[in-house]
Image 1 (cartoon, rainbow, N blue to C red):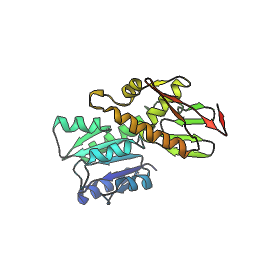
Image 2 (image 1 turned 45 degrees about the vertical axis):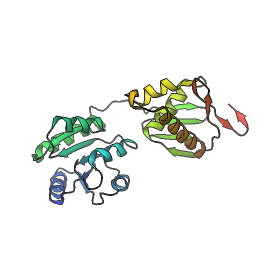
Image 3 (image 1 turned 180 degrees about the horizontal axis):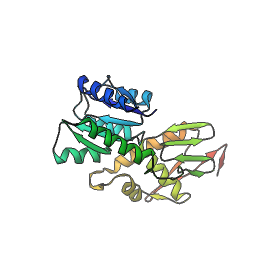
Image 4 (image 1 turned 90 degrees about the vertical axis):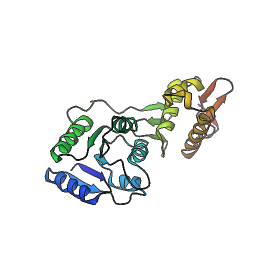
Length: 234
């Protein structure tokens, strides 16, 4: 059964949506801990998420960005905000669609069915999962996961993009500028130190799966992948 997670701090609206969704054969899960939406998301593992923008502590844009670090689950924003910029921000922050309040439940269901078809059904891309492999190291970009032997590291989107670039260019150097262009759309707002911080995080993820000194700094050029295992450089 497909599972729809509802993140809406107005419980009357949340319960109304939940009961309506269940009439169509879906399971609904209503979030109640607005301080830690991610824990509920991971436990629920929903097929689709309905997400309000105005929430306690952190807004829906924030939570959508956190979800996008781990999942490509369809996200439909539902909000009383009607401005064009709000809809633009919803899409820019990882949302797939936007519904304004007040809404008709049939419109919500139509959009849910549309997103489910696009993500999982007849309109979904019929492609095998991508995997990049070098000397026993495997990267699964759609999962944000890296595997080596029996070890698995969970990655953020930026970490995945950096490792993907290193693997694609292996054994060549991935230039700093190339990495900036791949990871950030608007380089004007990216400090050089930001890349250094993300490279440090990537190095730690390699260490987590048992690979030491996996990212070599090539002075004046960029970074190169080295897979060192049992005293041997492959």
